[in-house]
Image (cartoon, rainbow, N blue to C red; front, side):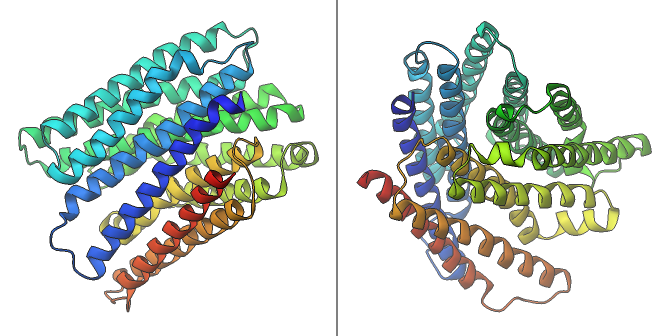
Length: 403
């Protein structure tokens, strides 16, 4: 099974390197000057390729690997075309967004990417139902597929507005946040939790409690979208529902942490030290994310969160890099799906360091902006941090190729 999934993992990690390369260019343009680059277009290319070429590609590959491990045959031949065409559309979005922004080609590739995600969801759902034994893993994966499909509403609304040059700030923001929420907190998070359940289900964790945790997150996910819309004039009952959803997710995470702590000896038996630290850091980042999410329900903090760009960027990167990317790398290492050598380990360590340095600088910059103070050399430091992330992923890719 690992030989079948390895090529797709290798491609996905190389895509992450491309994302880091674009990040260096974007940060260089902000800190210095690069007049022939359209910042907005390249930023759209950066984000769309990150979602489709890195996270979407790797999660689908790992989910297919799970199916293969539960059956007598590899499922990669069945899903090969979907993975291949998803890769093509990801590169199509990368190139078209970089040169055109929102135009015919970029919208075309985005639309095809969404249709492929629907096709994957339909096929994968059917294959999950065919498994002899249904576990909590299937619950998380099915929810991930639903939320991925749901996020396309925001993407289509946004594409329609951009194509028809409809300028309405509130609708624009609501569409963007709808897509981001059900990608970050739906598709990405629930798929990762499904992968995590594979690791802890061996530790004889009570299935009933795992289902309770799942439903806390699943039911809270939809109303939690309005955490991104607290700047609207929402009625009191809606605000109460939002607070309860944030509390439910934090409580669900607390219950899972307590459960993992009680079974830590059994779970550690399935983890190498290197992967254990990556998963711990991802868990730490998720704890911060859920706490910040609950804190943002306070009107004063909500105003700060949406009013300062460095804080918004720090929060989004905390999820995509600190939570999702670190977890995926930790999971891959724990499953021995990539070769481990000194170059790979060094690359992951440098990359991880870059993530937390990036978060620290963005947070300092955001806090300084709150007090109407300029952070000295912030843009230059962020450019240097982007170079650290680039270097880490360069070592990681070279180490994988070397082996």
